[in-house]
Amino acid sequence: MAHHIYHTTAFVCAEKPLGEHNRAYKLFTRELGMVVATAQAVRKLQSKARLAIVLYKFAKVDMVRGKAMWRIGSTQSYDVADVDIRRVSARIASILLRLIPEEEPNEPLFNEIILLYPYLAEGVFELALVARILFHLGYWNREFTDVLIVGTIDQLRTYGQTMERADIVRNINTLLDETQL
Image (cartoon, rainbow, N blue to C red; front, side):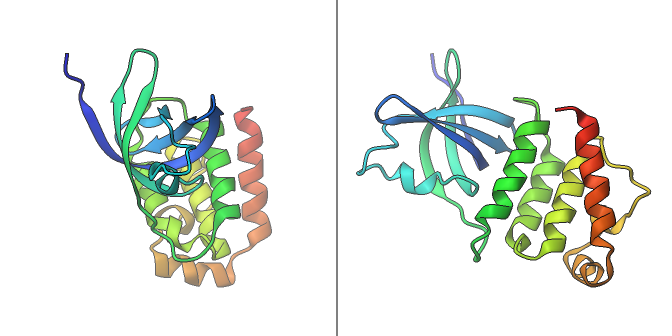
């Protein structure tokens, strides 16, 4: 029986060693949502996949649904940012892991992540991305501020110079506490 191969871009949220050479990943994808997928022999030094699937970055992956879980076939690096934003993207991945149910697609949210990811080194973009994650998952109080939710890159930069950061952080923390997750 032939299996359907899903070619997708994925944000690598978490990884865990499996045995001596394999690794399991939690990937957030446009078409499938949050999935757990395994990669065979990815921990070997000669593996090309170990350089393509990097924690807290984007990768292009080909996946097949197995009996119990997804399996990763070929991979390709897909780096959308020029700066090192590992600490910020780790916080974003933590929020995604906490709030997104498995295998529930959320294409608008994935598009927001890919749009704002290259700018995460600028503080306002991290707040905007967290606000947009909460908005797309139904937690955000829309009347608090619309610029964070619908603003363009230039509008966010301008807003970042005049915003009350403490109020926004307080609102985000309150909403995250209310999720009880």
